[in-house]
Image (cartoon, rainbow, N blue to C red; front, side, top):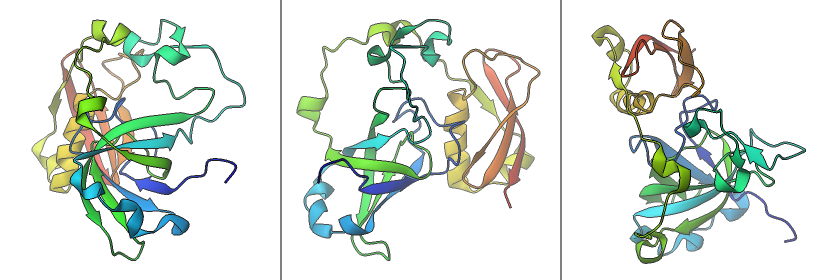
Amino acid sequence: MDKMVPIATIHTGFPTKFGVPRQSGLVPELKGTVIFNPEYRNADALRGLEGFSHIWLIWEFSEAIREEWSPTVRPPRLGGNTRLGVFATRSPFRPNPIGLSCVRLDSIELSTSNGPVLHVSGADLMDGTPIYDIKPYIPYTDCITEATSGFTGTVSMHRLNVIIPKQLESKTKPGTLDALRGILAQDPRPRYQDDPDREYGFDFDGYSVKFKVPDTDTLTVTDIRRLK
C-alpha cells in the first residue's frame, strides 16, 4: 500500500457541519456508528479492543479540503478575530486535512450485515466522515496531568441555558432530545455572530431545528420539525 486509504465511515446525526461540537467529548450523549469498508470487515482486527473504554479516531476533514493552505487561521474560541499558527490550533484548514477525536467505545457488534460495527459516543464528526485509523486510548500515556493548554486555557467554556418548549420536546425521540440539549448548550453559532433577533437553524438526527439566542446566557428553541 503506497498511500493512506479510509478503512471505515462514521455515521452520526449531523448531515452538515453546523451544530457539530468543536471538540470530541463535549456532548457525551451524541451517538455514532463506525462501519468498516468491505476490505476491512475482519473481526480479527478488533480482537482485544473490547477491553478499552475509549478509542482514538483518525479521520479526514472531508468537507474542508483545499488546494492551498494558510500558515495562520482564526480559532473560533478567540472569536474569529485573532490569527494563530495553524499548528497551534485544531482548525480543519490544514496542509493535510486530518482530524483526531477521542470517543467512548460503547459496544462492538461483530456480526452484522455490514460486518463488525463499533458504537461510540461523544463524537464530533459529520455523517459520512472517512476514518483512516482506530487506536485504543491508553490512560497512563495519553493522559498527561501536567500538560499546559496554551490559548485555550484563557478562554472559559460557557454553557447556555437551553429552553425547549414542551410542545416541541414531544416532537423528538428521547435520545435525540438529550443530545440536542447538549449540542445547543455549547452554542453552535459562529463566534462572531451574536444577533439576539436572528433565527439560526440546522439539521440533526432527522429533524430541522430552529433557535435564537436572546442574551448571553439563554438559547431558546423556536421550532423542531421532522425532515421528510
